[in-house]
Amino acid sequence: MIRLGYPCENLTLRASTNHTLRLASLTEERVRAKVAENLKDLERILRWNREAGFGLFRIGQHLVPFASHPHFPYDWAKAHGEELRRLGALARALGQRLSMHPGPYVNPGSPNPQVVERSLAELRYSARVLELLGAEDGVLVLHLGGTHGDREKALRRFVENLRGEKGVLRHLAVENDERLWGVEEVLRAAEALGVPAVVDTLHHALNPGRLSLGEALGLAFPTWRGKPKVHLASQDPSRRPGAHAFAVAEADWEGLLGALPAPADVMVEAKGKEGGCPGQPSRTPWAEKYP
Image (cartoon, rainbow, N blue to C red; front, top):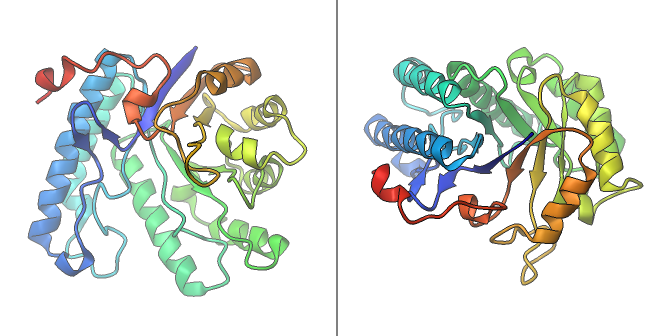
């Protein structure tokens, strides 16, 4: 069985879990308003997903904007914990698997202690969101970051700086990228930390190392205790290598199906969001039903 999902927003509903604000506007009143908007849209998306046949959703990193910033104005987990627990229960009732994916600014392997400190704070925030949601199968996806002139030292720092982060490691999964870290190297970090590895098909096509897609998936899938997750995307031909297309090309979808060694959850990273997934549903009636 294959379940499909998409990240952060739903274009049909015009709903997003990534409403944010500028750091200069970081007041409790304004943040609470953005969080309320994000949580309302999260509920709309979860209900839509169930009826439309989607089983995965990646929550936007700005669900609680600047939550990991040292100047954040209030205890966000206490203030929003009850609503997050309610939405987590709803997600489970609707069969929705949730995830988060901090951006490239999160780099625990950096040689700069301040970057590491900020990165760990963002990862702790993400893990806390998944914990409050009660997302037992929730996944916190992370790239290995830069090489900083020495691949081995960067990989060691990444592992060492995360080794004691039990709350983060509970949900963490590490992912290959299109330039620096292939699946084989990501598997080294995953093994050292005792976490699973996510294979991104587009990244692997651009940075395959010695492995075919089938071989990469065959090595990554045993690292998962639960159902493995895979990222699927197609290259936008008009942009730089690694840029996602609006929709997944049929050849890329068929290539993944032919390479999968077992059932998986597939996160479709298309610019068209739910409309970029293979066999996407009709978009017309949904916005009226989930206002």
